[in-house]
Image (cartoon, rainbow, N blue to C red; front, side, top):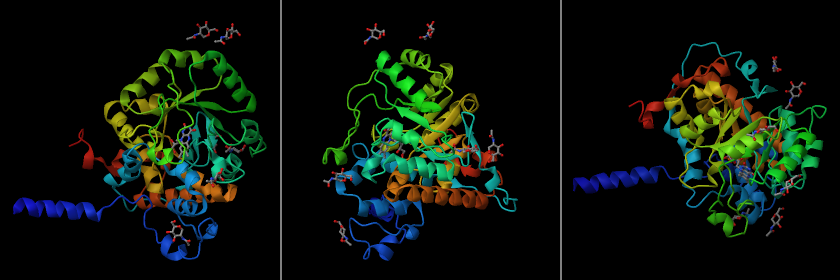
Length: 386
Ligand SMILES: Cc1cc2nc3c(=O)[nH]c(=O)nc-3n(C[C@H](O)[C@H](O)[C@H](O)COP(=O)(O)O)c2cc1C
Ligand SMILES: *[C@@H]1O[C@H](CO)[C@@H](O)[C@H](O)[C@H]1NC(C)=O
Ligand SMILES: *[C@@H]1O[C@H](CO)[C@@H](O)[C@H](O)[C@H]1NC(C)=O
Ligand SMILES: *[C@@H]1O[C@H](CO)[C@@H](O)[C@H](O)[C@H]1NC(C)=O
Ligand SMILES: *[C@@H]1O[C@H](CO)[C@@H](O)[C@H](O)[C@H]1NC(C)=O
Ligand SMILES: *[C@@H]1O[C@H](CO)[C@@H](O)[C@H](O)[C@H]1NC(C)=O
Ligand SMILES: *[C@@H]1O[C@H](CO)[C@@H](O)[C@H](O)[C@H]1NC(C)=O
C-alpha cells in the first residue's frame, strides 16, 4: 500500500511536468485561430524567442520545419538542452545598483567587439526559412551588432553572404567549417575563407559520424555530413599551420578535451552538443561548463569559452556566463526568426538583449562581466558540491 502510494505520487509528479517543446506562452490562444497554416503570424505579435518556433511551425512546410527542429534519436539531449537550465535556481541579490547594466554588455570575442555576450550559431540551410537565406542572418546580426557564424553548408554562396556584410563591410563574421582531413582541400578552403574576410574559422569537431535523426529521416532531411570524418589533434596542428586566422573548436564536450585544446594552443573552445542533433545522451553545454568549472576552472582564463544549446531566455545566458563562459550561441530561434528575414532576426536579437538586461537586473547583477557562480544554486544536481 505504501509502495503504491509512492508510485502514484511519482506518476502524478511526472505527469505534472511533461516535456514542453514549445512552452505555453498563450500564443496559441491568441493567434491559433487567425494565423492559417502556411501564413506568417504578424511579427509585432511575437514577444519571446519561443514564439518564433510557433510561427515557423505554422509557416514552413513540414519537411523544412523538421530539418530545423529535429534532434538525434530519442531527442533526449535536445530535450535536456532546454530543460537543464531549470534544474538550477538563481540566487537573486537585492538592493544593488543595476542601473548601468546595459553599458556593461559589450563583449569581445578573439579581440573583436560586439554589443552583447551572445551570437548566432552556425546553422545550415537558411534558405528553408526565407528566399534570402543567410542574408537575413548576416543583416539581422549587423543591425543588432552581434556576431554571426555562417555555416559551411549555407543555402547562399559564401560570396553572397560576405557581400551582404554591414558596417561598411567591416561586420565581423567567423566562418564555420567541416573538415574531412584532406589537406589540399582544406588549404584551398582556408584561403577562400581568408580572402572573403572572415576573422576566425570555427571548426566543428562533434560530428565524426552521421547524426542518427529519425524525425528528419522521414523527410530525407538528415545531416549534410554523413561520411566518417578523420580529425585528430595532429591534424588540428596541421590545419592551424595553414591559416593565419584563429581556429575555434566547436563541439568540446568534456573537461579532458578542453584541457587538450588548451595544451594544443587553441584560442577559443565552443562547448556544444550540436543542439542535441548529433549524439543522443551527449551533455548540454551547461553541464560541460559545470564539469570544467569543478575540475579545471583555470581553463576559462586560458582560452575563450563559448557555449550553445537550448538557450531561449536571458536567464539561460546568465547561467552560462556565471560559470565563466564568455559568449553564448543561439541556433534554432534565429533560424525560425529568419522566416521574416533580417527584420525577424533583428527583432529576436532585441528581445534577447532586453531579457538579458532585465534578468540581470532582477538577479542583482550590475555588470554582466562580473557575474559569478555565486548567483546560481549549483547544488541541486551537482555531485561535487553536495
Ligand atoms: C537547422 C540546424 C542546422 C545546423 N547546422 C550546423 C552546421 O552546419 N554546422 C555546425 O557546426 N552546427 C550546426 N548546427 C548546430 C548549431 O550550430 C548549434 O550548435 C545549435 O543549433 C545550438 O542549439 P539551439 O538550436 O538549441 O540553440 C545546426 C543546428 C540547426 C538547428
Ligand atoms: C494547422 O495544422 C494543424 C496540424 O496539421 C492543425 O491541427 C490546425 O488546425 C491547422 N490550423 C489552421 C488554422 O488551419
Ligand atoms: C567596444 O565597444 C564599447 C562600446 O560600444 C567601447 O566602449 C569599447 O571601447 C570597445 N572596445 C574595443 C576593444 O573596441
Ligand atoms: C518545403 O519548403 C522548402 C523551402 O522553401 C522547399 O525547398 C521544399 O521544396 C518544400 N517541400 C515541400 C514538400 O513542399
Ligand atoms: C561595427 O562597427 C563598429 C564601429 O566600427 C564596431 O565597434 C562594431 O564592433 C562593428 N560590429 C560588427 C558586428 O562587426
Ligand atoms: C596535394 O598538393 C600537392 C602539391 O600541390 C600535390 O603534389 C599532391 O599530389 C596533392 N595531394 C592530393 C591528395 O591531392
Ligand atoms: C608548420 O609549417 C612549418 C612551415 O611550413 C613547418 O616547418 C612545420 O613542420 C609545420 N608544423 C606542423 C605541425 O605541421
